Image (cartoon, rainbow, N blue to C red; front, side, top):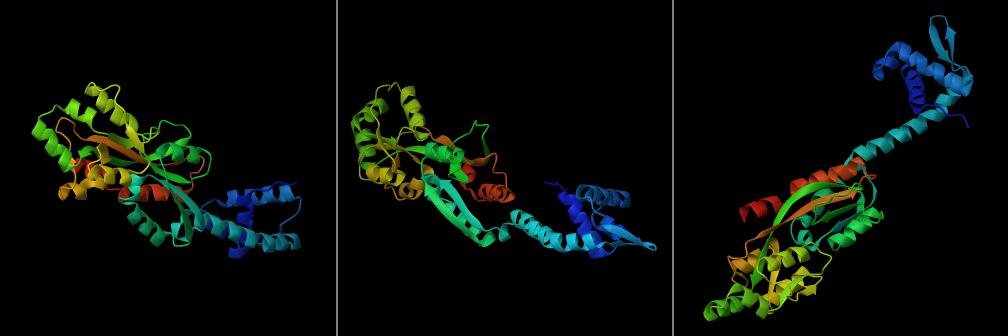
Length: 305
């Protein structure tokens, strides 16, 4: 199979369209000798004569006209594909995005509204999952992008920082009142009530364990749940203590339905990124990552805490 340069084929089409080598050189930002060289390479590859001299003008041969007639739709189609890849508004297809619950209940809705406005022809498949599962799906090619609670140290994945979110140790007003009334130390309170956290694969789990260790609590049992909203409900009902994201408890704290456990347990920060496979470096993916960074409220939320 004869291999020809797409650049050379595009050059031939521009010469035919504009009527001269000089005009094509100007359009393609090249010198006239470079344009002539491309034509020669194309003729050598195809082993046909594409131009013939008519006085002072160069005209396409029969074979040249046939090649241009067949190549022009192909070149136009390739230009359309390239344009669509670099123009979010022209992108079509299915985009698979993974997102954690903390993001899903925060600014993700705003991000999706902006994406729909900018890329109205795209169909979205959204999965709400834990970071460890989303990372695996990214590496297996089952997700195109994932918004995760993690700092990635992977050569396979590319990530864009989205800011940090405050994680607060929260309990119910009833437990807090009992704690003050009885005057029990913090360690004893933590050992007396159920501790709730996301399941072990989550990034929250080791954060909670390390915090408890700093208080000398090494063997404390931790109850787990795969839903943050469910844990908020459990704690609000007086069912224990949990380290929860500030964005999910801010309103309940304002209404005094929930309270901070103790000043001895300051807020901790959980970092977020939007990540994609390094081999999926399409312009639309980079566009979404930039838009997510602009939309995220986590940095501002963390600074206010």
